[in-house]
Length: 503
Image 1 (cartoon, helix red, strand yellow):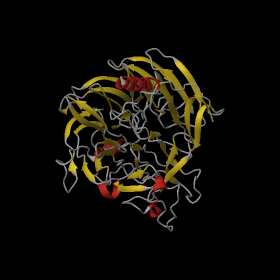
Image 2 (tube, rainbow, N blue to C red; image 1 turned 180 degrees about the vertical axis):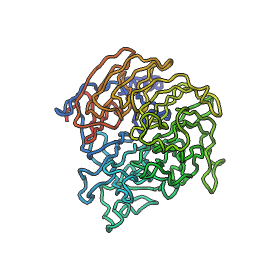
Image 3 (cartoon, one colour; image 1 turned 135 degrees about the horizontal axis):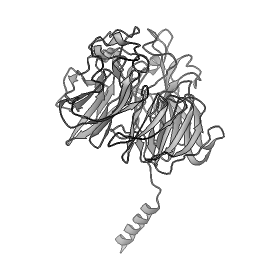
Image 4 (cartoon, rainbow, N blue to C red; image 1 turned 90 degrees about the vertical axis):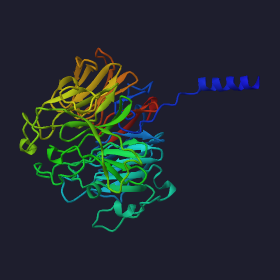
């Protein structure tokens, strides 16, 4: 009888306990990179200016291109140092801010001096543009200097943990005496410099989102052209690398992407999927070709020198584009190689990829394509299931749910397609270009544009606008849902949106 009563009590407790929702600890859902969330009961009616349904908001810099991530009680987002939170850090810097999830208090910040050899290494005011990944008490980020940094999510609150302990020198420009480390500074656990350690050539602003699988980190390197935009200085540079998440050791690299074919830069982060029972890594190179690799196998693949990822599959996203002397086509808006900015999304055996001509230097053509992942070798002629033309260029990653796929483009449109056929169901104009990706959550689609507006739609086959919200500034970052809250990062401010809240 005692056991029955205990079981009944536990069952009642489970029934009345609030549902604990999920963090959003990386860019995109799980490892598929699908831009969806399982959150429910999210707010779709708020007023940033009046503070209605705003749990908290926090000032950022003047440019924020990094999507916020939420994990282990923290919200982490990259920005610049336009409004210094610590007066000892002066001037243009890359900044990664960590806020307390409950109230938005700034817990710590990683401040990184800009590279000064050439503005094309580290574009002015772009800050830290990469999106962080959180796992447990660690955050992983690619800084504006092209470094992979592993950070203690507790900051300096539990002391300066190693093995890296020279935060003072790291956060100070080389021509100045090291600054004193304070309680607001980040605690770096280890660093891996992609330029020195992997031989890459950084271009513009490092833009990466690290994928974690077991003890391995998978990330695009950001290697690209030099300041002439017509030369690859490091032709043997990898586009994709694997690091040990515990130590930062370089374990493996790709050898599939000829660096000389990279039209501009390596923007796209990798994703994972399961094909015929085998897990596979998918990656879109800066040459417009999508690759499938075997995952790195700890123990078997460990060598003194970095190994080469085993290519299993490849798909040329734009097979009619130029493949040789690619930089001859710089500035050609009619004919140029293609590039891919957003991430490949794996869903139900298919890979959905958006790409096309380069936003700054290439042709205007862009497409969203559905690609069958079954097969091996070069599947360009057999794997394409459908192709949908977009307007001008595309920076976004698609969102897929319940047979629908949503994609935004820089032609100022949100498109809703049938995911099986690729047929257009509806589209809607936005006030500005779309650099952010759409987010599907709670039966809604959230999309903020560089026109300083946030549109919320029903995630349905027929267009239904639920809200149009004016924001304080343009938006590059994707909206995020976690633990009952929607996070919207504009260029200048981060908003935590929840029902019944007033800032």
